[in-house]
Length: 426
Ligand SMILES: Nc1nc2c(c(=O)[nH]1)N[C@H]1C(S)=C(S)[C@@H](COP(=O)(O)O)O[C@H]1N2
Ligand SMILES: [Mo]
Image 1 (cartoon, rainbow, N blue to C red):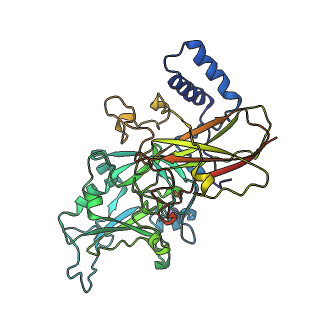
Image 2 (spheres, rainbow, N blue to C red):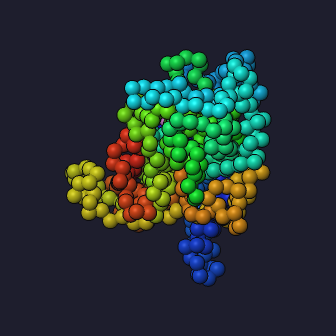
């Protein structure tokens, strides 16, 4: 069972709608009475919590925050001193004086933004910039070191490149270093970085890193890294620095990411993968068994989610990833929850589907499904299982036809082992 708190279920109305969309698309062309029959059959075994909400409620995220005390536990004057209120928040952008044996010249900026000089950026100025250059992005937050995604949200903000442009021409800059509030204790610094190119030159069709100041239509709660969080759409959680307060442009060509210290790949992209929801360990024979989970479309996109049901014979050896039994497995496609037909009921008030990254600006429908770097739900219904013990595995296949965990079997580039659920039919 995962520790991941289940997101709030969709309302009953949303559930019926999504199920009908699914049934309608599966039975495209079928007569009305048949599709009605399919809809009527589904709820018997489908839990009310399916499908997962596309926007995880703030408090349902699995929280990963360093520091003692946690910045989001501060209150009152301590919060103001930390510059973590909307009024007190400031962002500094400075040039890192770093040089070395091989790096002769330090980075420079035309105009640094500093607290000392009274030029640090405040929230109204950031929001004004966001009104001219807005990005809205639906993103799965996933920790490189945790086996289940932490949550998903609709983040709004302003591209990092537009913020950096406020500093005028810069020289000798190869990376952008950034960090959040850390109790003014150097030991608690949690920092990350991007290359200059990643920050400044967004390829068409790719999302850009941005300074987010809204989550799900509201100011970002302190708990999720507000007032301002840096969001790197393609990356694992450690690049999306909470309580952002300082950016330093540098001529150091090395990644400074805190996460790299633990043998993690500091340039890892979100990995296409399927995750299993918790489910009962015993089912009575005779009823269909409904199993489900989340599918994340990572860098290489998602072709399908598939499952393998393995009956465990008494005394048989346990299946090991890539052993003969595993290699001979027959995998069956799962159902992917269809995108909502009416996004205005899913997106926060004030956010139009047409302005969300990856949506067609004319139709307001997602260009791909699931959207890259976001998640949707999958399910499988197992019928007519004889009493006995079973292992159920699910995996994602990417658009290059690699099945999870390939091509990334090394878990320090993202936990994405194939999940298994063991159960008994009695
Ligand atoms: N300032 C700061 N930002 C941070 C962290 C942190 O400890 N401090 N943890 C990072 C890690 S490792 C992850 S996985 C995500 C978790 O985001 P969440 O707590 O919103 O789920 O935040 C990232 N941003
Ligand atoms: Mo993380």
